[in-house]
Image 1 (cartoon, rainbow, N blue to C red):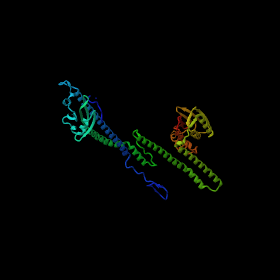
Image 2: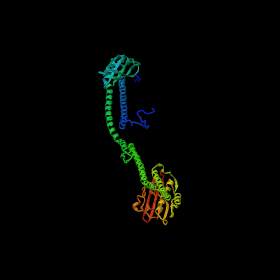
Image 3: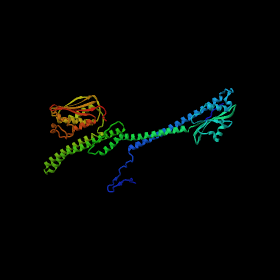
Image 4: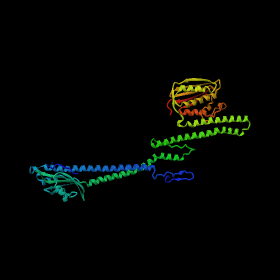
Length: 497
């Protein structure tokens, strides 16, 4: 570093797989488990980042301290030259002239008045030869011929740096002394920075040890906290291993609102959907097996006993055909219930409520000789599946026909109520016992009064409930024996899907 100041005057097969030649199937080995778990990998990356940040901080802190030392040394060097300048211009009481006219006198007065700081030394040269300096300097730089030649030949102020074997590095500033336009001597002040640099290095080493302890504590605490944070992931894995087709009830306890907790909630939601899907599948198989067993037995028994008499054969074929038709209707109903769980069960469009009810009324009037009535109709448009709603209302009217006689009335109406549209099918038939009103919407459930009248399998109201729930709506019944029944299908007026 140099600065100039004015003188006193200015394979075809993948490796690791095996193929069964008899079946042509390929058995792949299970995925190789990583040597380090997710917790250690995350902790490792965190420690690496913390280490890099710590090292960067130590380097920056040391550089800042060194820069501050350099600035302080520069300020001290300038201060010493300023003090010497004031002595040079100070008036000598004995002669009435400035001390600078006699350089030796000026140097002696400066050395008497200014005690050097720790690690500081002053060297003065008059006429190219060393004259005087600080007593007991950290190193006698004036004894080095290379430095003295460099200093005594300087015609301008400048900085320099030297490393002494005994005292370490030192920064110096040489200022030529100009008297009457001629260089008569040189003033040199040096700062030995070895002790200060060692203090900086000691402080940085102490910081490094402290940072190392912090890293160790952070690693231990991070390992424990990551274990708690990643516990839901282990629970997800354990739950997934324990799940079987026969038991999908396992769930993960979720505590928190972070990403891992969201994953656990998503996994629980997936299990809910899988459980519902398996329940539907099991219910479909169980219901189909249970309800189809009887007609199959009837068909098989009559076919085995069928004789050669033509009339007997015609009667048997008619009975078998009727049973097969009933089986076909039952299978169709079961398929509708199974499909109700699928996303494409509904095809939503804008449905004019009044037009829908009028169409259903026209179709239902042909189901039986009853006193058919059309009640109030809401002037509203509903986002729904028109065909599914028609199917549900037709099923309710069919159910009403089964529980009424020719002298009874059946009324269809639709009213807007808040954010819902209420479709009602009301009859004056035999009614439903209160104890049966909760179970009539279950599969294969029929009221006692309807067992003798209906040839169905008891799936109609279950289909109505499935259609209502697919629209995010509800189905309810109000009934009493001998009074009649009112089935209300409530459909929300917002988009269902």
